[in-house]
Length: 245
Image (cartoon, rainbow, N blue to C red; front, side):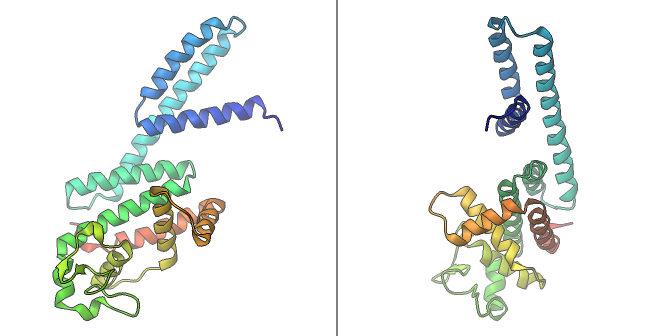
């Protein structure tokens, strides 16, 4: 079925907003406005008031994007205001900002991806602050259960007795460490879903039936999933006591 002019206009403005967001500045909007103004000079049947109206719409989009960007930055800095490592605070606030922008546009995949990025960055910092490797070696029984063993095995913090680098330790293993270290609980399902979404958003490859179901469910229930994912994320972050002053 043929789309209406209004539908095409709405689609165009969404694409314009997305392009500008990916460049993360006003360069795209500015260049587009210049290119468009040159193009319309050959359109004798285009009324000047239509041109002016379209140009004003572009400017409003530009101001809106700048406002959203600033608003999200402030919210991120407020959320992480008690983080004691300045560099970490800025990095986390940056991802929080991108998460909030994805939130406003209901981009659930990017929303979940940014949550996981903040989560792993925070947990990595805690692991280094408390020296998790020494903690595990001092009390290995506290860091093993029927599903996890952080002292030995492929998903442990060690490889043949030597410390694994953070990048080589799985996020579920890192999560198990902080859960045991700070003695708190979390609901695994939303965390597992976010990790799977992050992995598929960041890496190419075949997708399993379960992963496809998770993606489809997230896209079909955006509002409830955003709430569920943030609640799970927030619970973990607020229990990472050594991050905060």
